Each structure stands twice: as C-alpha cells, then as structure tokens.
Image 1 (spheres, helix red, strand yellow):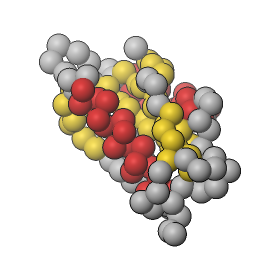
Image 2 (tube, helix red, strand yellow):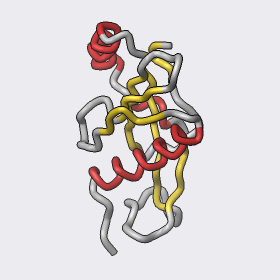
Image 3 (cartoon, rainbow, N blue to C red):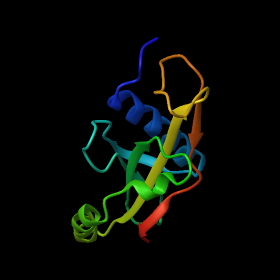
Image 4 (cartoon, rainbow, N blue to C red):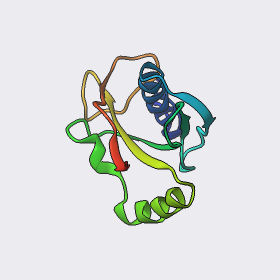
Length: 122
C-alpha cells in the first residue's frame, strides 16, 4: 500500500473544503494547490468582499482548527487587510480509518474531521 504524501493529503483537504465552498454558493477567483502557498482559495460572491481561504490538512481529528500558526497568521492578516479581504481558515483532520496511528494510504478508507471555517477576519 502506498502512503499519501503531504501534497496528496493537502489536495484531499482542498477538495473537501472546495466542495463545501461550492455548496455555500461561492465562485473561485483563484485556486492554489501548492503546499505552503497561501491562500489556497480566493472567493467571490456578488455583494460580498473577497475571501482568502487557507487550508491545512492535519492528523488531529479532535481539533483540526487548532493547527494554524498564530504568529504567521498576523502577517497574512495584514496582507488581507491591504486587499480588503476576509480570511477564513479550514483545518481538515484526515486519518486512517483502521488505525488513526497509521498513515493514510492511497485507495484505503479514512476519517475526515471538518466542521466549519474559523473566521480570522470577518
């Protein structure tokens, strides 16, 4: 069995978040799936300000939204404010369904923990 790479886990998390954003009626102005390049999504919805969405895959199923770097986030918030944009964070917990201690394998079942967005700048 092949273990998913960090980039593959990131892409999986982005797909999960992207589906939720589509259900919420947002259009994608830009998408960046490169690991550690932010934001992952730039959103548009008529009558609303631009929204930058940061996505992070984590093995933390209990609290996936606790995984962002608060010091780095301050720098990103300044960038968003200069662009009159909101900032949302989406922590997505992904873990092996047979054993959360094991890595996630390609084409094998996995758990997902993603409830909602942390609205950093609203």
